[in-house]
Length: 185
Image (cartoon, rainbow, N blue to C red; front, side, top):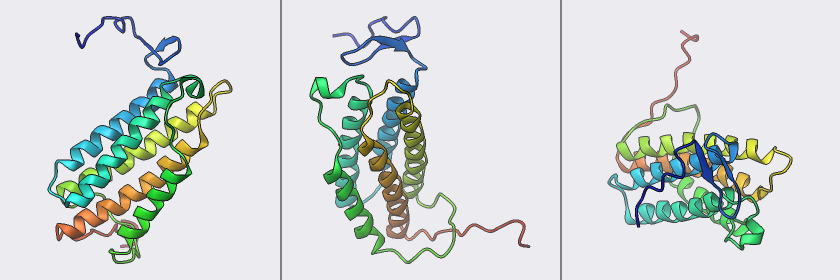
């Protein structure tokens, strides 16, 4: 099987179980940004980290495939796809609580960065926020059926990625850099 099909050469792509649409369609933007987030999490997993954290990131990548499949499908219920739901959101919230309990409380804004793993997770958080915005734009189209759980999941996931970035930096003994207001000098 060849990787190229030439069917997208005119700037269109096919949706799962649906029509062909332009590659700049908001649906493509939404699931494309989720795919980008998945790739950034894959990159973050290449950095030295604990097996537990790597396994968590892998499980999040699997969740993102589920979200991407739903977003790529105009009528996901007809296709009987797996879906992100309340249990997945609760699992992410539990992870936030677990990892946040190991961190000092935040008293100020911090700059993204730190260790390579922490920095990659900060990038993942920013991409996750963009994915959330794209999904909300898609959700606001009148004829679009998108599960509300996807937006909630992405919102919690961005919080988790922020906590995990802090955790990765703590594990790497990389201190957080507090934001300094340039107007306060």
